Image (cartoon, rainbow, N blue to C red; front, side, top):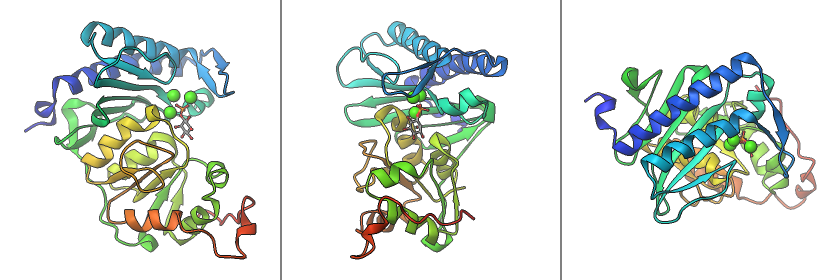
Length: 282
Ligand code: IPD
Ligand code: CA
Ligand code: CA
Ligand code: CA
């Protein structure tokens, strides 16, 4: 069957909201006409982030008035088991700087389980999506999509690892184990944000990890990774978008990576925290 025939009504709605988000974000990104402000936590937000979240909330209030909504830029609304989780622009720093790697993330959770997710990166000409039990897909659009699958790489020495930045690993206390893991992998790249996880779901990266993420950063990624055959959890090895941090692997490597990230540095080595030794990225 074509990927479109497998879609549930909820996933179809998520795609419609992503289409709408894409037209807002791409026109603002191309025009380079943004109002950037600082949030109380000193991170940046643009008027495009706010416009996308407002548009998603407006659609949901009409199409799913009984569902709860949790978005990065707004107040939580509603209550009950069905909850939409929205990150209007993941990669705001890229968006502001003119780097085309950013995406709108839209997920639906029922109780604590993510049941559907769409990740739309219009400037990469790519969208990824999944619904629970229905597989994961990627493509330019709904009609030109293919199923995606994680890699089968079986050893850290053969693995490609992607992350966003090193600072959080040090402050979270996993600095040295993370740097050791980077050193032992075949390749390390900071693709960053949603992109690390979507490359993992496509089999192009074998380990994707970040030490500090919130539910809105993770929900859509979690279902796409799992439906592509991978594992998604926190750095401690618990399943789901539960934080702290998000570790995704092709499944084969998961237990070993969890073990490595949680193995304390050898006695005498702990003076490497927090000024860890950073290997050359090759
Ligand atoms: C950020 C990205 C980034 C992570 C930050 C997030 P935003 O999301 O996910 O990778 O390191 O903690 O806030 O603000 O661009 O949506
Ligand atoms: Ca943000
Ligand atoms: Ca985000
Ligand atoms: Ca965001």
